[in-house]
Length: 270
Image (tube, rainbow, N blue to C red; front, side, top):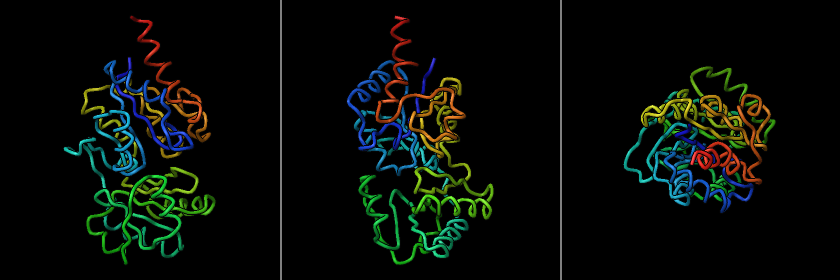
């Protein structure tokens, strides 16, 4: 019944220790062997997502940067790309200066900051990526940014999110991916839009897709998929729109979903 599974990384496929459990790895490989396409749909940058895809032996297009880029694991083809415009990129930098909040921008699979601080150091360590410090982020805006990320106190970012919505409206997609992460992308750069685009290219119907996520930035992923699955540790707003709520990320919720909807039904058919 299902031909495509799109799985978020942090809080979903990954445990709190940022690992994929051995049983989940085995299950994903079994699902792929059965003919179902498994991909990642993450806010992480492509180089970070690629490492997990290689661990899973996935050789498929990956949905990265919150849906702003779909690119093959082997990097031979970019399927989809929607950068933030130059105008909005410039305004976001102005916002960060006005509010004195940490901002980092992504361009050509490189993350840039204008200060080497604790926020970027923690991010780089958790995401297992390097970063580049520049004097002026505005010097990079000519081609726009793949994604812009604000990092700060959760309550503070909630107020900033409201202000950004007021400023940009439908000109930008703004969502929290973690309590202290506020992500800004192009309006067409969300996991749901990217997922539908990829499915169409692969000849897969919307009803044949499973989407699994845990946070606010997974809303479009969950509501677009034929079967939207929220993690047991997911935010309540996501659980309220999900078709199914699985176990937590630390209790192998992805494994449970794959067994329930793909592996066990296939075993029954045989």
